[in-house]
Length: 279
Image 1 (cartoon, helix red, strand yellow):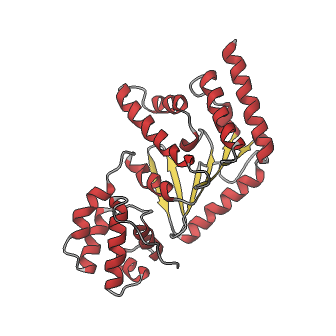
Image 2 (spheres, one colour):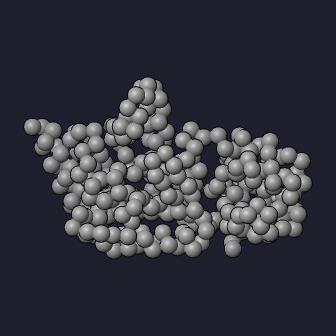
Image 3 (tube, helix red, strand yellow):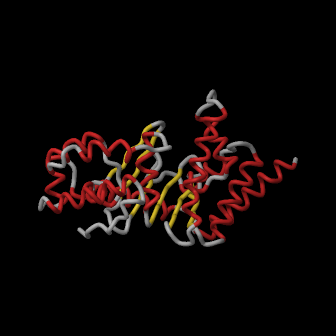
C-alpha cells in the first residue's frame, strides 16, 4: 500500500489529526493493518484517516489513544475534526469528495449536488423540507453551492456522471429552473470539465435499479464507495465491496448513451423546458 502524502497540519483539523496519527503509529512501530486490527477496521481505513479522507469517530479516537499511549490527544481533538456544515450522514462523504482525484456517480433521480444550480438546489431542498424556515433552506443551499466550487479547478477532480433519463424528465422547480439547470450541465460538458452520460429509459433494466452509486478515488488513499438513501448514507472501503460497485458503475455506463448523444439529449430537453416556460 502506498504511504500517505505529507499533510499540512494547518490545512484542517482532520488533516492535523491524520498527520499526528501517522506520526504516532510509525513511532510505535505499527503498520496500518496492525493498528486497524484491534479497532476491527482495515489497514485501508487507517490509511484514509491518515490521509484525511475519512473522519475520525470518537469511538476510534478513544481506542487509538489507548493503543498508542497518546494520553487522550485524539479523544480531545476528535470533536473539532468532526464538525461539519453538512448533515451527519453526508459529512464524511463531502469531506472525502473535497480531496478526491476522481469522482464517478450514477444519479437515478436528481442532478448531483456538484452540478446543481442555485434555483434547482433550492427546489430540491424545499421538497425535502417543506416546513423548514427559509434561513435553514438557505444554509443548506449555500453549503451545496460551496461544494460545487470544486469544479472551479480546471482538471481536478475528474467528474464522470451517469444521469438516469428520469433526472432530465422530472420537472424539479418548474420548466424555467429545469431549463437553466440542464443548460448549466451542458455548459460544463462543452467546457470539457465533466463527462456526462444519460441512461435512457429505452435501456430497460440495469445494474443499479435499487439506487445511486458514488465512487471516489484518491492519489494517496484507497478508493471508497458512498451509498445513500433518504436521510442515511455510508462510506464503504472494503476492497471487494468497492470493486462490486465499480463493476455496477461500469455496467451502467455501458448501457448509457455516448457522451455526444447524451449532450444532444440534455440540450434538447433543456430547449423543450425553455419553450414550455415561454408558453
